[in-house]
Length: 193
Image 1 (tube, rainbow, N blue to C red):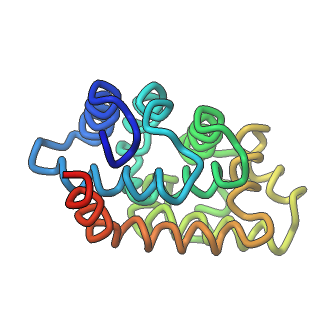
Image 2 (image 1 turned 180 degrees about the horizontal axis):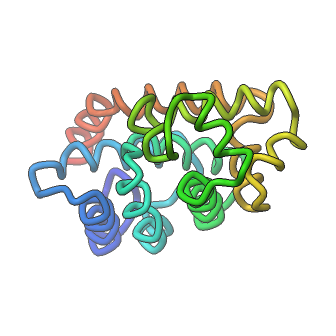
Image 3 (image 1 turned 30 degrees about the vertical axis):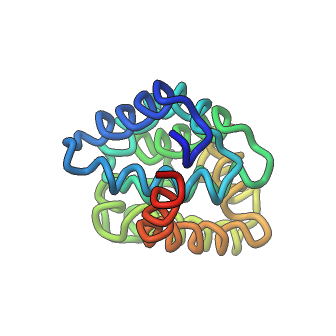
């Protein structure tokens, strides 16, 4: 709680949302705490706000095979652009929805990628790989092609937020930093102890 400027109750709510949403046991507490700490550090995210909203997203992400690190990197990337935490999670939910209920154009892309579904695509190349493939669609065809592929305003806003300017580079950097965030978390714990 001290390391994220949140109350103990908020920290417990946040941690339990993450653990429960991903079906993780108590043995994963330190790793999940480190991921959350780094997400808060990189993005414009408050533990108190995230504790109220994360549980709406983690079960869907987990069922699709999106790692917690990939999800949190996307959240930090969107929030650093000024998108509120709850809105960013809604946008991410809509991206996931379009991977579960694809448009005709998205189904064509799945065939081009050699997979049958969004879940299979994530299983094959990870969420970061799927985003990389969608970013290629965006870079080639612009927002119009992205709109044709996603066909949902919130999904379009979410993917555009991850792809515009240097956002996708930021996403990959955030993913790497979150994945390696355990050392920084341990240092913060030592300082506040």
